Amino acid sequence: EVQLVESGGGLVQPGRSLRLSCTSSGFTFGDRAVSWVRQAPGKGLEWVGLIRSSAYDGTTEYGASVNGRFTISRDDSKGIAYLQLNSLKTEDTAVYYCSRGGDGGSLNWFDPWGQGTLVTVSS
Amino acid sequence: EIVMTQSPATLSVSPGERATLSCRASRSLDSNLAWYQQKPGQAPRLLIYRTSTRATGIPARFSGSGSGTEFTLTISSLQSEDFAVYYCQQYNNWPLTFGGGTKVEI
Image (cartoon, rainbow over all chains, first blue to last red; front, side, top):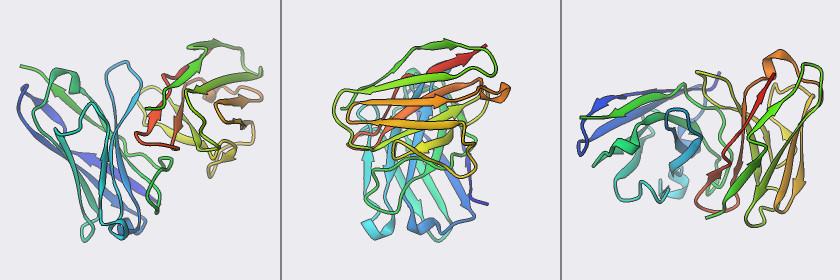
């Protein structure tokens, strides 16, 4: 069974940093892109960013609201993707989901999704 | 950025009825559109990709159609487990974007 499990969320003060992990199982992690999507409390879905597979040099794309503050990386040997959140703002408070993308350059749909991890930014 | 607009925001229907959800894109997507279902406290689940292809395990009562900028998700006969929020997502251009969602309620 293909699975993704997020971890690393919690309460953090504005301006501080946090690193989220997305641990995979059930598929060849290195062959697929991974996206991060967030959902603020009571709101809709917002795409955060994506890291392509190693076949595409692990390059990244980001949404405008997080570009320059958030960084996605991956460790294919461990089957884990990371989301480094820097300079956090209160408006970054959300559940953060990771999801599997495609095996190309990766304009793609998301399937499956992890269960999410809650990040709360507050003083 | 391609803006995705879903309508209506809330759809009130009865079990057994047909539900039609709309998604409009600000630019043409060809067929690069997906639909997701999200129930309270759960992660989204992929229903449809490439406008009309059902994901693995998705019942046949869910169908997608459309092209260009206008897309539709139809649930032919609503079951109790179908009451949820539905999102469309375009993957034709960067950045990837979602619609604001349609809540299907009783």
